[in-house]
Length: 147
Image (cartoon, rainbow, N blue to C red; front, side):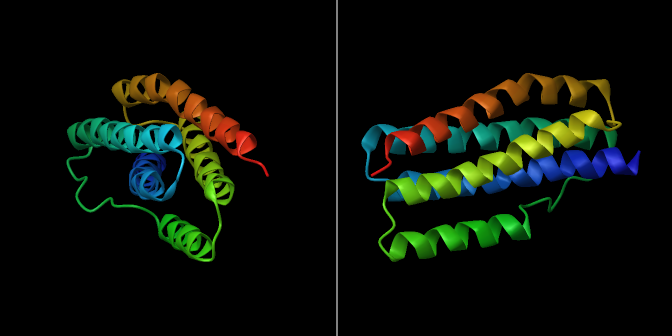
């Protein structure tokens, strides 16, 4: 069962990364409609993480300090560097799409494994289509900003 906990905790970490990354991108992206998408999506990721943490706490009792991932922090730093070097919206959206790939992968791996509870599985199944739609939207934004 520990493996199920770790895969769900990984999903929570990736959601926490997404919350921070999307808020950051929302401030950096120049196009107002794309920027507002990222700000809204940041709040959605925070809500998804909270829902999963609450279910994990019911089963495990300990969800303190889940935080984000080291790779997520590195990914955001790399995005900051690209932005400071004059990377436009397209460059930032490429970075965002890579983060979305990580989110899709985390959900897929969690759902393919043994999960700690049926409630957690139900939550993951409810959230996963939104994660896929968000990935597709980020990709569409990226494609629309090609020079």
